[in-house]
Length: 182
Image (cartoon, rainbow, N blue to C red; front, side):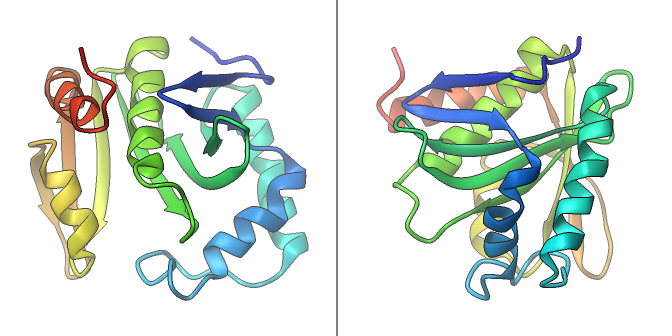
């Protein structure tokens, strides 16, 4: 399944839409924020380079190879990003999960859940792959809560695999904590 270029969704009082080239400044501001980028790959502060990366991304999006989302609140004020990429037959990689310091409480978690719902329920994947920096203890604790299988590690990262079934089980618990459960 391929998402339309104007795809957006509102769910759990959270708004997601596909990234656009004019989002370059916002994305770069997130990636350059020293309080938020400790656990990210280094990026230059070149706005044109970010726009070029987004132009290249839009070609991958057009082909259904990758989806980069901006995440906001119900009023569509943007606070963060997530990305679904490296698509294989049944697997995809989840990443680029970064949010502003002033993001409403729980918004990053809801964005994560919606992004994974898109990958599993709309795009039809059965397995999510992701990595977490070993020294990123808060995010590591959050992701371990999904009960993924650790499939590898190196000096910097742990690598995980999360099944659709485990996602659905934990999602219900998280949504209940966030007051969206049944």
